[in-house]
Length: 191
Image: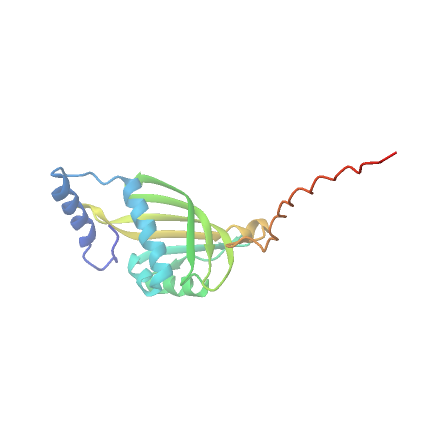
């Protein structure tokens, strides 16, 4: 579904052919289906093989990083975008997606992701928002996309929110119930 801008995008065609062969019916890939697959591939690449991330972008791809109520100048091109991702410490990190919304557009697919992100070797999750525009690689192929635009922001930089821990803070175990006290024996008084 997603391939580097300069590469032949066989994955979408193969997926479509496999689905057709399995079911005997050609399947229309929706923007939601493509967006979910893209997001899964993108964040898996950031986590497992950050060098692969550059292949999602093309020479005309643009990334903007928002930080503390100011926006940086847009970054153009796969190599510079990859350098920015590395400078932000995103490589090797783990994203937890809470919301994903996708819409088709004349030029491709717009995707908004909301979630938390833990950088590699951190036990803290930072809330983030990221918007992607997947551009069509060719007007003739509705299933081949590259990452045309990327806007990324950590939410805690804007709201002064404390990052969330990936593991709950150390908690003391709940008190164990005590066995009932033995009944007190009534003393018998002799008169």
